[in-house]
Length: 326
Image (cartoon, rainbow, N blue to C red; front, side, top):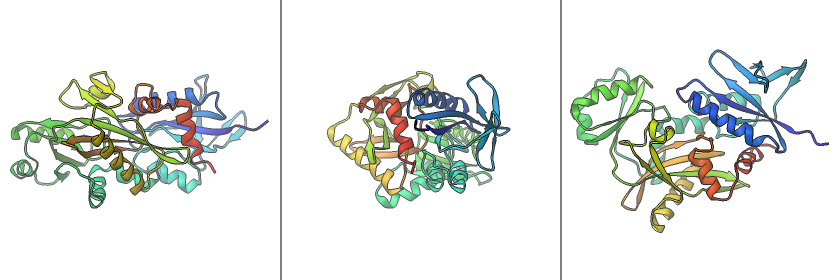
């Protein structure tokens, strides 16, 4: 009988996206059960790294080789399935750690993770490739804040965002110059770098790109209509949005955003699952951000898109593993 390969599903993390990651990890565990793989739930927190046994017991992970002792037997893993949103799973820290251990993992490599997690550096890296994005203004903590210069550059309304954060934490839409300082303070609570962007008034779409059976596959596109002022945390996770897949956009818009999303994936040498957000100005897609460990709950956008493409969650999760296992 063939021995099943052991898959460590890492979840949790150190950011505000902790609970979302737990939901993603549980879904991955559920859909990998009964496949040719043997899944293990691994909780990553600042205070502890532990294997969560089905009976609720916690077994510490040996960080020297990412193994665990079970019934006096050392269990080593064949692959890590990354379901951590935010640090340390989406910003390159764990990717570098696993690369040092020689342990395959399902998300992009450490440099690509660090680059895409940093909105400012990502947009700068993609501009030479013709990728369009909103006019922006950058601030580091401690910089002098010149409201007049900010408004002159990005105009109003504008978005003030934490540079390295996900799930719309630390983001505000600002209509008046007098409100800029408060929004900047909110963003600096999430990160020591912030990005202030011109408001783009157009149709927002989310585009999943994955490696599937050895090919780069762009999934059906999702149109996002937020009940709130923008696609914020409530809209993303508390039902305050309408998500339409496939998006109600023209064939030309579909062709353009598909090409751009695939170009980003292949130019940056990404792998695994990604989800890029765009806003259309006319027929031109403007990039907002790239997520390299997108949500994987049954309600999350990427699983919805995969379903529309005829890919089940079991097939989706298995494909991420087969793409990196030798």
